Image 1 (spheres, rainbow, N blue to C red):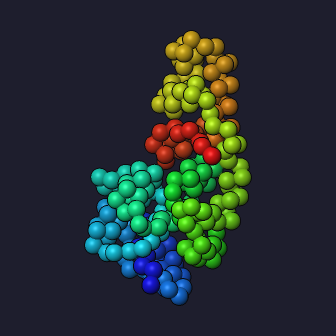
Image 2 (image 1 turned 45 degrees about the horizontal axis):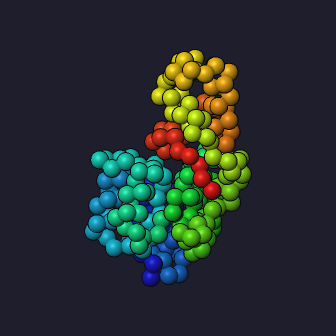
Length: 210
């Protein structure tokens, strides 16, 4: 029997996923959590084989998102991780998919997609749901931003204007603007709103690698 812990801050999601998993032969939900603190406690007191978790959970002492998942992979390397999320930014989904998880499922997907991720996903070949695949097609172009492009984005997301960045780097405002636009295009970010959401979700601007 594959033992699963569910982590999501919406009780309706936990209830729906639990009902589905309990009807799947060979799988059983053994615990649930609604925050990173609860998840940490459940992982310590409830043995499991798999974790199905939202990407962003209310946190207490532990971070969420990539910070949480990286910590989990270090502390519980034997536990398979399926990410169930509402995130629709291609760059973030790309980051999650290539972070060593066993599957990525968008909450707009049919529940059967979660079932496939649970059964078919692995760290070597993560299962990516239909909705997530469609979003990823709009994402990173396959080319990573250059070092200077990343530098420009980092300066921009912390509040520097293009004019201030240009002065600091001794470049023209036009050049800095083109570097910012090029980096965002490569990362699948369509506007400044998505850039802001991405930087908050990931915690820092990361290079996209294939």
